[in-house]
Image (cartoon, rainbow, N blue to C red; front, side, top):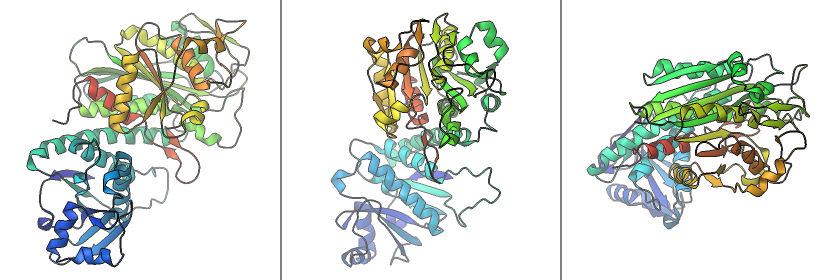
Length: 502
């Protein structure tokens, strides 16, 4: 897909299709008004006849509009002008791309990037349009024997900006949007891969692929033998019931060119989670291949980071593991010794993600990190609390939490902060070990983060629970969403001082 920006009048565009907005009720946008004047009222006459009301998402494709050089004009309903917000803008872009892809228009000039979106500038509108377009065009069909493709797919789109002065801003937005979209697609591809292919070794291979593609990336893999030497008893216990070896992949990106302390991203990589001895119900268990959504998100963010070539040091950790029942599997009632030396009583083997992450979080102390962010499809309780719309954010460091919330707002990849008060720690008390791996049903997302917090005393830390946002469940539309790649990449853009649109 090719993207570009230009600044020009609609009547001078010679393209397969021009895309302009219409507001409710039947109010032409400024660009649509120009086309209406050139066509001697052709468009406004159609609206008066009731062909388009202007409701958000309505589409009307016109052919051979008088005095217009382009073959087609696509009128896009944008709702009420004063109510056009960022969510509606992204939905409009997505619907437009899907429509264009079905019309046979292989190229288009889009003027929707000139619409006024409350509180958002040209950079944001163009970048969001690029990301939304790539999201619409994504498909996972590598394992299908018959691949259905549009006969004449959309191949080129030009976003118009109001003035020539904004062309560099638009070009920057396209570059950033393409990098983020590349990371999102990487995340989706890996997360959508079935668990008989995507195991911890597959995750390690994907990490090594980044090393071969980018000069600033180096990858190392920690195997079970080294984990045993390091005392990672908790991590190793989770994978004991599986034939697939647990592997932790370390991706180092040296962009700063110095020894400055790195940002560390740690992703939960349970490539399949059966629940272990505490076996999950059979219905919907196929979706437990997405329990490595955190690792997929970290891999995607590292890909986007390398594409952007940011001047910052970042380390991505993919904590690969598979949780299976078996004669050697760990059990409820076991007491595990973590890498930190703390002991954990296992109450439920399906609360395994935190047992993997706790050792990974101890391991990354050696990097003397500036900050550590772990990403995990950790708790069903987060889905109950926040649904599919917001990622759960918990942190022991207020400035880091505020940075992530700001990045979530900028990127449209929403997060919501939950409390991490000491009172919740009491739910983890154990009579047989330092604490348990389960705090009961009340505040399950919070107590899971409380567990992790016990291993993060030596650095600034935040936890992202993406159980509700990393994938869509059920039906033909199920699959990875690519979240939270956009949020993490925006956070890294901000940290490196590259977030400005100027």
